[in-house]
Length: 443
Image 1 (tube, one colour):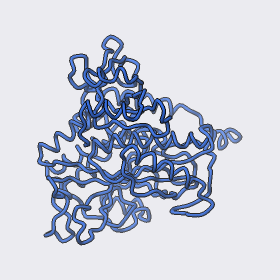
Image 2 (tube, one colour; image 1 turned 60 degrees about the vertical axis):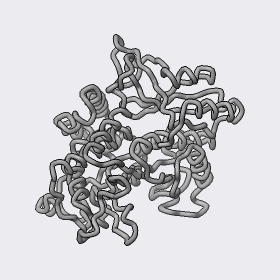
Image 3 (cartoon, helix red, strand yellow; image 1 turned 60 degrees about the horizontal axis):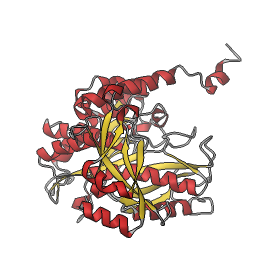
Image 4 (cartoon, rainbow, N blue to C red; image 1 turned 90 degrees about the vertical axis):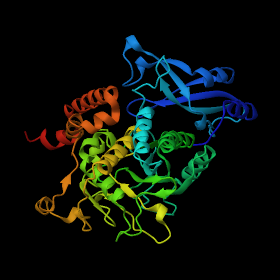
């Protein structure tokens, strides 16, 4: 992370005519919460933090214990490029503290810090992540009205969002986020902007920033951007394929030059951990009822619990090794979607993988055949299980999981289960139009 002092921040504010500083943090579900202070309040905020009412934040405190402190992380200072340059606006991401200044156990950022501490105790200095967040541009937020009929990597007049992506990339880079790719995705009006891999905490901060920037730039152009996993029936949904690796210093712990496939025992155990605990953490990386409209066979969203080197129908893919690219050895977890809370999702993935490393789980043989083409009987014979097919089923696995309770901590665990059960119950009593169309005239 970028090292800055309080004086560095105050100097940047003065030099860039910053008048307002927005303090960001997320609720349990990953929604960005924010309030603004003026430059005259900044020095005190950097020293002591700013108090706020935590009882109104989803999943936070009860009314009788509502006082919380937002403590800005100095490394996250960035000027918002879409706001005016005169009397400019900056943002800082905060850690949430209790009144006694101890870390608040309900802060998702703290959950990730605890997960990284476990990795460090096991000898891993870095947990590198490269998530690929897909999203849609629509005409407004009332209906999925597409802007184009383009397809994967299209560069034609169909891709009317080229300027949108361009402005988004420029804004992200101004905020210190390194971008590698931007392109049209498979579905109409679907797009992707890929960030270069970073350490996990920095990347989680970048993910929430990315989602805000994509939406702000879209709004500037008079359209709407959404990270809803499956907004259009019959089309691919939006995923967040997450590339990940562990490092010891500058050495990639996933690479072994002596192994036949150059994949280390640590990597194999880590993959085994992700596979074994994938059902338990599913409600975290796919946390909405809509997520499970995406997690169905046939739309590039993996639902089968297996791993492979080339096969994108598997839950985990290990990109092929290229000589001289040892540092790039990694695994790609393909089931997460961009509507998740990145702090909790990255924590859950890390804990699941570390559990495999610590307890030396044995990875099953890789599956190189297209898993979508196998029958249920054939998959069963090969021991290939399936992710939960609904939020209700996923929550049942999560609620019974000791690993997830350790990952989230008791406070978030109980509140997360409660929130997701409520969401599932509200969803399952709805009478959708498709049921009326199918049954009303004949029953």
